[in-house]
Amino acid sequence: MSHSTQQHTLIEEPICFYGAGSMAEAILRGLVHRSVVVPGQVTMLNRGNQERLNYLIQRYGVSVIAHESERENVLRTSKVIVLAMKPADAAQALRHLGPLLSPDQLLVSVIAGLSVESIQHLLGQRQPVARTMPNTSSTIGLGATGIVFSDEVSADQRRLVRYLFEAVGTVTEIEENQMETLTGISGSGPAYIYYMMEAMIEAGIQGGLSMEQARELTIQTAIGAAHMVQQTGEDPADLRAKVTSPNGATAAAVKVFEEEHMKDTIIRAIERCTERSREMGAVLKEENS
Image 1: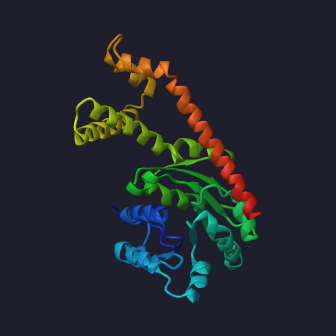
Image 2: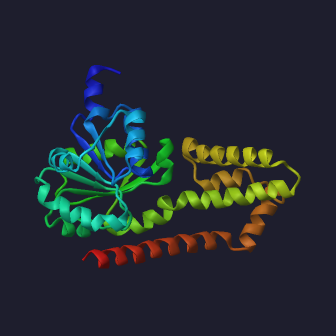
Image 3: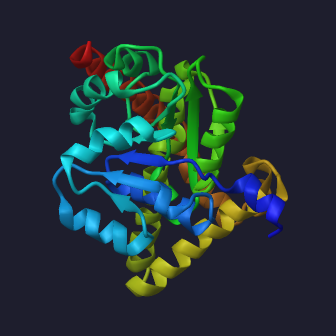
């Protein structure tokens, strides 16, 4: 990597993760692994779990806050603060955070259901906010993240947020009213694929394969199918047609799916997920207003 590229990709400003759970670690892992951040410039704040913080120091070389007195100083001086606390802890934390901030500090939220408006309301000011929805595949660098920017976020800050999440997968910039739909597709989407895989493994075992064989064949099939769509650029429907000979075995399976209205069921499930995300967001807004 040339020196100029390195300067272009490295984020050298102090970053603070407010919350140190699994999503915070997933993003941190990607950032450290891809040399996007300087580990010593990253500080993790976590409520009371010293064992967790010790693990993060040893694993990634980040800084942690040992004394409560240092916490405010870190929050005042971090160029970027990643809000990764539990939704239940968000209101109190944000109300306390607001008075500490200067106007150019960027907040990046990975808190599900908390709108930009709610975050700014709790802070008591119109701070630059990027609201994100990463999914769990971020933990292995194959995440899909949706991002919404408040009007206050500068072009440089937008680029910086993209760097943060491109380190753990792909990034899609959306309008905030699309966030629940994105949740229904990519936020909860891994669970739908796992559900299909569970059924395939079960069918394999019922048909006489060992657990290991059924599992290995299912995993590789799922990986291969996703890569085929990605690498060929073809529509999934066209790829499906190519492997479905008329009156053949695959066609017989697809016919069962169609008779059971499986596509409609999947769409209905995604619509319900989207609706439920909206309901949960409304409750969170109500609690925090």
